[in-house]
Image 1 (cartoon, rainbow, N blue to C red):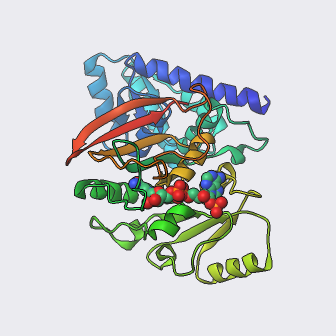
Image 2: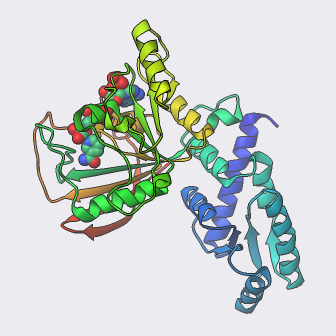
Image 3: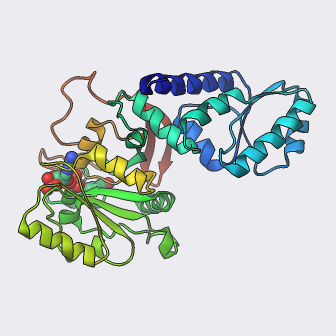
Length: 357
Ligand SMILES: NC(=O)c1ccc[n+]([C@@H]2O[C@H](COP(=O)([O-])OP(=O)(O)OC[C@H]3O[C@@H](n4cnc5c(N)ncnc54)[C@H](OP(=O)(O)O)[C@@H]3O)[C@@H](O)[C@H]2O)c1
């Protein structure tokens, strides 16, 4: 089977699971991470965590409810296989059909991790070019978060960016704890000099995500707070070298900073995302600013959006907005969003969207 054909098979299998889950067939999974992956794949329905309750208890409960079929999607590692066998027999003994074929089909195309499938599925369904190498297609799950005014501004014309309320800052810092990396553009570093650590809510140092700065010409000041030792930092820059640039890279590396080089004029964001995934950074919080946000939307690299809309209006055609850059030319070219959640927080509103693939 060639690459395109096997990718088509993955989509088919996911769609199949989606349909059965919507029909009310419970999906047996390992835990919260798998639930999140399935959610990101657009699968909703009843998820049952097999790691929390003994299998026989789950099987008994479902039998009592009159459930005749389940989908088995437990983890695919060695322990997972043992579980799967146990699950199969407990359910089959009670006359409940275990839809294990779907699991096996997915297993064929993954390296044993639902996160991989999630990433690949996003690639195919976003119609990003299929790469010759399977590993080169893996992309992190990116959540874009901003605090903006009602008129979509991220700061005033004189760069006053006090937009978030007290509880919104706490929400963002809780979100930081959930991700592997925080991504920002060099514009934000130069204008705000943020620390990008978790410090508005209780946290231990290891909960600080890796800070990633996109900086094509390596303009980052050596005194930038993002280079402090509170957390690891990755600087993404372009490939072309010069004596000055090489010297700065050497200095950064000696400070413990990781430097990734990709792209010629600007950092190649898709390659960067793939490299970060390979380095184990599978969930990223994109914290702007507007120029980088556009670059990420343009390349179809954003999966989710969370926005705090403050009851403020800043105005000013030169004030940064949520998404700047060149902009999309037509409505068809622009990202399609689906509102997933909204709630009031302090004096603002939180809006949460999924980017439709
Ligand atoms: N309210 C909020 O939630 C929030 C959050 C963050 C930022 N902000 C505000 O946003 C403003 C900064 O935004 P900004 O637009 O000036 O800067 P930015 O988006 O933080 O950084 C943009 C820079 O990233 C670099 N870059 C490298 N490769 C890129 C690529 N492929 N695509 C896009 N950018 C790439 C470019 O500089 P090089 O070419 O030199 O690499 C570009 O100018 C500040 O006023 C800050 O306060 C607000």
